[in-house]
Image 1 (tube, rainbow, N blue to C red):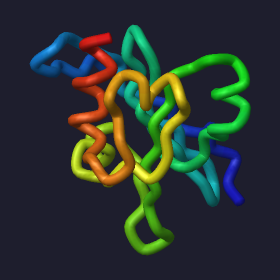
Image 2: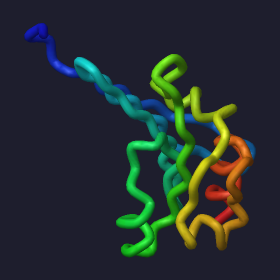
Image 3: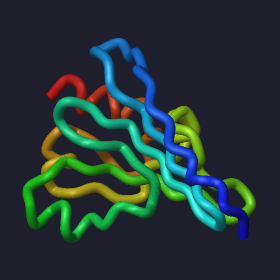
Image 4: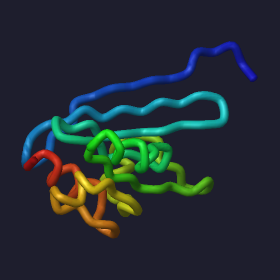
Length: 109
């Protein structure tokens, strides 16, 4: 293990329906990424849908694999959504769609 600080990045992402914030966090042995819209989050599998649903939040998650982890927010663009909260489902986000399409629906509200 090194004494280096974890890496955290944040940048503006542009979509047809608006803009969002893309984030990436990396530390020794782990990482996660997300696309944060004004109405909810498209993120990797680290997010807990049950807790988010309890708070009425719109969350859609995609899942990477150890061989192909989701590290940067752009990795979510083509990743398949594997779970959604009820609020995200109300926006038309469905399991099986890609992360870019899910973000576009969240930006529509």
